[in-house]
Amino acid sequence: MSGMRSSSAEALANVVYDSLSKRRNVVLIAPTGFGKTLLSPHLFLKARSEEFAFNLIHVVPTRALVKEIYEEKFVWLSGKEYQVGYQSQDRLEGGGKSSFYMKDVVVTTLDSFLWNIYRIPVAEIAKVVEGKSQGHFYPVLASILTSIVVFDEAHLYLGEGSRDSRTLMVPVLRALKAYKVPFIIETATIPSIVMDNVLGDAGIGRDEVDIVYVCSRCNSQVDKVKNQGFNVKVVSPNEEYYKRSKYEWETRLVSQDQAIEGASKLSEEKLVLVVLNTIKRAVNFYKSLDQPNKVLIHGMLTERDRTQAYEKIRKLKESGRGVIVSTQVIEVGVEVDADILISDLAPVESIAQRAGRLCRSGRPCRPQVLLIEPFDEKLGHGVYDEEIVKGTLEEIKSRINGLGIKAIEWRLLDSENSRASYIDILETLYEAKPQSPSKPFLADVASKYLEEEVSPLKLVDFLNEYSEWDAFKSTLLVKLLIEGEDYREDFVVTSLDRVSRMRECLDVSELGVKIAVLTVKERGLTELEYMYSKTMKEALSFVKRKFNPSMFIRGLRGELGKLPDKVEGVRDFYILVKRSCYVEGEGIVFQA
Image (cartoon, rainbow, N blue to C red; front, top):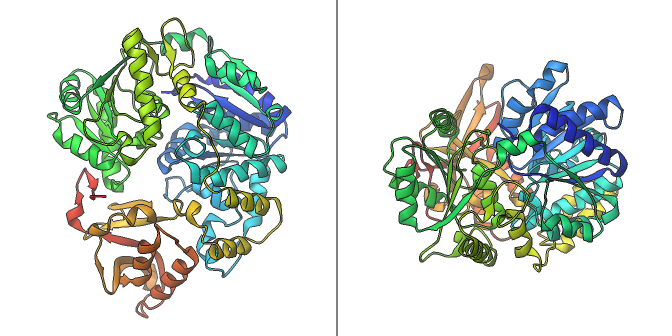
């Protein structure tokens, strides 16, 4: 349950809408669990009634978040006779899939939004990238140009560690400003220096954007952005919110052994959330627990395992005890209301997001954050910038050694007395760290492309000629199927980049990589056909270097064209994963 009631959402929406109507560019910074997502329906209704915008597009980083928002948080709009849709690689109930954003309100993944705004319709990626057609990009552009665009959980694609997505997003923000499309950047954990650089790189002046900030006593970040010349609107939550959200957080550093022992013991009476930086660490921790009431969730679970995991999480939440072990996928899109967090060290913004899964319902709660100090492992485990993690550790140590275990406030954006908000640590860590897109040349080309009426085939030609597909490659998703299992439930959606690191789990020979093709036969019956794909083998060899999607799609289409004559069409394909790399309830685990 989010921290903001419907009436509060409407009140904050009025402040945000006022800024949108005057400046069209808004950054909303509010605590984790505050309910920022709930603003969108209210903004849509007000904009539609005043003819300020016709639609609303709500952009989120994960498929899980699309599902949650579409099925739960925006569903009430359907009762008001508005059409609510979604766009992701999933097939959700209700028939609301809207690849061209033609519904009144659409929840979409970031990767789908990027393909669409770069004029390569997500429903037609294959034929555009292959060069066969420029696709029907005008309808989706018309939808974007008549909408309010909300970028939710924006720290995940604009913050530190997201340089490739930032390379593509900065030109998008510049284009939205040029087209006068109102947009909102929503986050709880973005450093002011990152925000300033992203907006500056997008050509948005400090006097052209409003920063709407949800706090009461506030913190050093508010003072800094005011001094930088931004227009800052401080919105103070009501007393009811503070009564439900103000806790005395306790922060401690523990060893790996203490973490395992603590999770097993504490979970007998409390709900414990454990977040580790890698799938391998999460699986090993899960298997080490001496506790029957436990569940594991990470990005390589099959759809069947994921459904069962969510159901078990629901039951653990109801009972108020047990252990949820996860990777950083828990930071967004999974509603948890735990009492205790045990976490690998990570950048302070990630720790804050993880801590945001605690004490969300306003019940009596004593939140504890137990951070695992690595003994002989690299800080960040190769996932995060080692220097940032080191700085986070030093800041946390300094504060709890000097002021005690209650020195850090992990939810509210208010610093007071001897307790500092995590935002103050965030500002300290990033104040001198330079921020810029990872590929300035590509960002410059992307900006010019979006500003001019150029065919998407020209963009494809450029990306092919200069081998600049790297920034897009994380958006190229494929399906993995466990060997011998049901293609409808026992599959995993992941990136080609990740698949390239799990070669030992694939059936690879001189003939290629073994794939399963879901074919359509007489009377519309479907059946799996198996083949070895040289194209897939080459793609997985080159994805870490210079990957060419045009050649990949062209080659794969040619191979699929050699299927038996009785095949009338192809509905989908899956890369087969060896049964030995899969454990029910634990997902696909590989060494890399």
